[in-house]
Image (cartoon, rainbow, N blue to C red; front, top):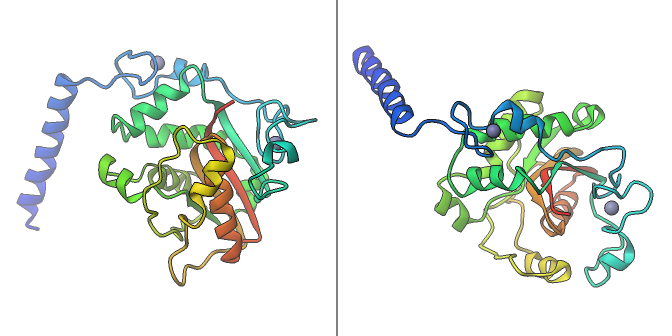
Length: 246
Ligand SMILES: [Zn+2]
Ligand SMILES: [Zn+2]
């Protein structure tokens, strides 16, 4: 491109951003105050999970000594005796401001929240996890969701996390066909997902992977994705999500 055209494009972009800021000022996804997509006060006041009280296996908020989420009874009918990943942690409980952040990001297209979500997840990840992970992998959005939103929401968070941590980003998954998990129980979700998440042919997976997703509901998506990563060669999959339904 010619330098002039380049500059004109740059000025044009800056001008349209300035106009957009006047017409639709940036507002906090939680409290609606003008200024930032997530203000400092709302970020500080999120319902953060306490790592020391959470289940070391599945990350359930109060499962440190006895987890009610990932025991054999809860997993009965799913085909699992224990979670297929080495460990899982979530940054916040899916309550108070967290659902607003997820909705503003995924449903209302406030893509700038990817950096804030990544920052909050980064603060949650144990330093050992970050030191040992050889790749960051995001759970893939379905083709339909990607089309509907215009972006793959977790791929963008993964990119931000990769920049923050220096851990390489790897995209081993094929884009899955659509699956609607709403209203399904744990075992039904597992069955609904079976075989839908797959790696692309020839995908190369390192031994230690940090697998990320936005919300841990029943764990079905992370269970399925972890299985696929293990089958493709990952020896240690640790999961990290922004929020946890509890
Ligand atoms: Zn706020
Ligand atoms: Zn657990």
